Image (tube, rainbow, N blue to C red; front, side, top):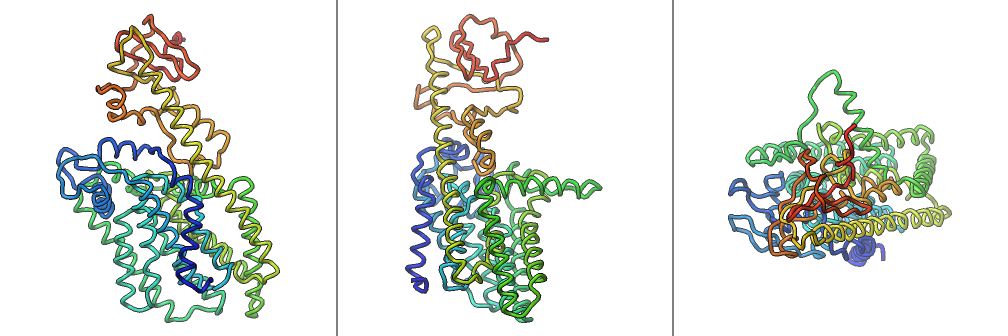
Length: 503
């Protein structure tokens, strides 16, 4: 069965669908999804090329327009949500990526080789990506395009294939910037472990591939200069300035990124991962012994290569002035784990049961984390929906609100993190990065929501520092907030401290 490409591909697909089932069946929106469903993706004041193109993702712009059926229209229109089709396509892209890794990178026809490739499907970071109703398909396409050229023969034409595929991948999403480089490290590690050296032909070929990838990246950055980029894209693409504190800034950011990378592995999952890494080192020792090399030197080399690979994965982000510390930013770094665990294929059959048990435990925990994240966000959504109904429908003088002002807690920085999000993050700290921005009430109630409920516009805003409303006679006190009402106006104090006496 492991030699049958068609059967093997569908086996990866079945695993992907089973693993991402909670996401494939979800019916709620993330913050970005809410905005795009409410106000569309189109042009701003009839300027620019579109939200995706103006964010450095022109390929995503084309795909989303095609899927939404409104390509060619010049004005903002509502996008069409075809989820879970978009999420299913993303899962298929991940399965195809794992199949390519198994066939062309690992190239080891065995169940251990299959398990290694399956780690790509069971990525604890891609959970974050596939949650999006709209963006999941473009993220999956970006990932697949980074590995697609590895199907080609090792010749000069394949370098052109790498250039084109990598360029299009970046035009979809930049999450997988370093992925092909990590895969090349894995291929070179495999050759070195099995042959003891890397031939000049192999070095020259992958040297040309790396030049092709770097040239493709430079071409992409040059192409962006033709687009009217949004402030968001500009802010998150600026590099740190060269100064005396640059090393300290890079080290600080690297520490945060390492925390994000390892966040899914805290607890029992981390113990299993460490066990698998030690078993992989045993595989390194066995391969070194068979080839007559110094075991300790080969093990040391593998450890150094593993650390180097992680640094290669995280360094580009640590050089950014304002990196995004979120689970989705690690999705392109999932191949680091393949470098760490690849020597497991050299273990003899006596170790296979131990490895399989560890593998099953590890990815069962990852699947549980997957479902827990989905259910936590669903609970957050339902919780906020209940609060929203109370705020909008509570009868004060039997008048529905014309304006609602939020007074966030002093530490919220204008983001209303409600109780469920806080509980999830406090009780499950490993999920704080993988868990997407849990719903903020301020971004969950868009114009479409208001129109659906009342067929009218309601103005939402943050508190301006005024405390006059503290004297209003109508007040609703709940565990979550205090709401003050006067006529058709509402003030909602989530911190319940706005009207405390000033000391």
